[in-house]
Amino acid sequence: GLVGIPGTVGGAVFGNAGAYGCEIMDVVQRVTVLREGSIVVLEREDINATYRSGGLSPDTMILGVHILLKRDDKGTLQERMNEFLQMKKKTQPIGERSAGCVFKNPPAESAARLIDEAGFKGMRVGDIEVSTLHANFFINRGQGTAGDFLALMDAVVDGVRKKFGIVLEPEIGIIGRR
Image (cartoon, rainbow, N blue to C red; front, side):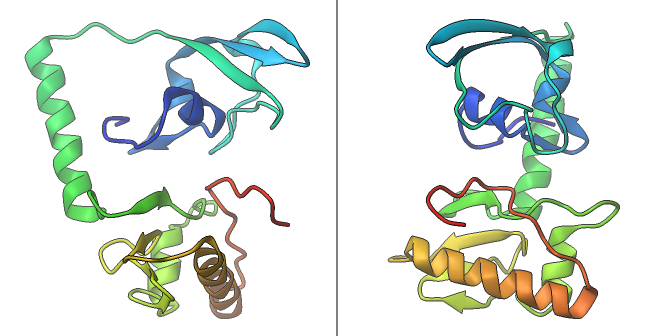
């Protein structure tokens, strides 16, 4: 389920990236980090990863990751990867200029469904648009700015809170604000 997730391995570990019931921390054995000027090796059982958080402090730099994968037939693996990629192509704006999912899914809920049912699909602020394919993706349609993106995030959070009483939390990292 991790095939096709955009970004880097370090970023995936830091945010405990996942899809289709899988998370990167499910396969991580240990992480080598730079913390306060020292190189430290953290074993998986010593890392408090949660949904969309690798359990590492923001000042930690990930230097290396040891991953343990299960052996399987190459053809079987390729088939499963292709199935996941096809599902993503049908349900997510693959190839568009986006940062991936903007908000975390609230417990037992879908952020995309809430955003859609609050009427935000296709809404734009400047050149940033809520995807009409998957409402938890924001697409840069040309000259969108960070300010446009943040203003659209604020509008969506406010609208979902007013309609459903649920406050969406960012899944993406925001530096320099709040």
